[in-house]
Image (cartoon, rainbow, N blue to C red):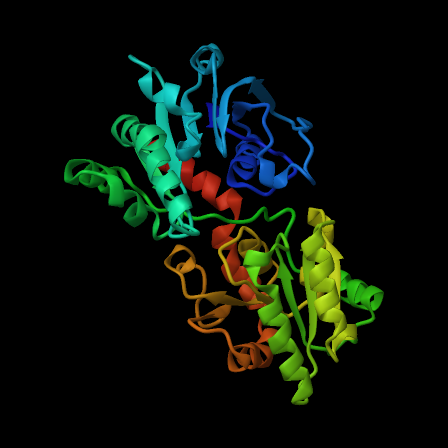
Length: 379
C-alpha cells in the first residue's frame, strides 16, 4: 500500500503525530511519502532545524501564503497524484494546507482526515484576539473544515472533545455527517523511544545527585509563562517544608528572559537544591529524566503526557475533556484544583506498580495507532 501524509508542517525532530505515523507506517513496510511545506512554525523556530533525514521521502513545497500557523502551497495536488497513493491521510485542517486535496474530482485513493481540535485550540486572551480569531475562522478555516467533513471517507478525531469543539461552527447537517464519519483515536508515543529502564533510572539519579529512594516529580514541557510552573514549585516547597522530601525536575528551559526569571524565582526557595532546571532535551535524554522520576505533573494537554505514561510514571493531570481518556485508577489522577494533597497522594503511589503501568500504556503506542488506522481504512 502507498500512503501519502499531507500536513502543513513536518518537523522530524519534534514528537508530533504526523512524524510518528510516517515512522510507524514505514516500519510496517508501507510505501510512505510526506507532502508538506518548507516552513518552520514561529513558536519552535528558535530550537528546531528543518531536516529530512528520514527513511521515507518528504516532498517539501514552497509556501505561497502564510499567516500564523496557516500555510498554503501551489502544486500540492500534482505532487500527490504523481505519487499515485492508495491512502491519503490529511492532518492539520485548520492550517489550510490540505484544502486542495478535498477538491480532487474522481480520486482513486481512500481519504482520511485526522482532527485534533479541542477546548484549548480556541482559547482567547482578550477581546482583540477573540475578534481576530472569529474573522479568521469565518474567512479561512470554516470552508476547509466543511470540505474535509464532506469529502473524507473517514474522520479520526484524536481527543474526546474534538467533535464537540468543531460542531460549534457547523450546521446540523454537517454535525451529523461529522459524527457519522468519525472514529475516535488518540495521540500516543513511540514505543522504541519511550519505555521503562532501571539502568537509566539509577544512572540518571546518580548524575543528578538524587538518592535511590527519593521521591521525584517531573514536568517536561516548553517552559513558558502560560504553563504556570511557579505554582508547582510553590507546592513542592510547601511539601518539603512539612517534612516530605520531594525533588522536582523541570525539563524544557529555553534561552530567554522568562527562563532567567524562573531560575531566579527558584533560587529564592529553601528547597532550591532539590529543583533541577534542565534545557530543552532530545528524546533519549528526556526518557532518562522520566526513568529517574516517579511522578509526572502537567497543567495543560501535551504530547509529553503520553511519553511519560510510556515509562510507567504516575501522572497528575488537569480535569480536561481533551485528556480525559488517558488515566485510570492505576496510572494517575485528575485534579480540578491543584493542591498539596493531590501531589502527596501521588507520592504514595508513584513508586508502586510501575511495570503494570507500562503494560497498560501500550494501547497508546503509535504502532498500535498506525495499525488501527490501516484496519479502519479497509472497512
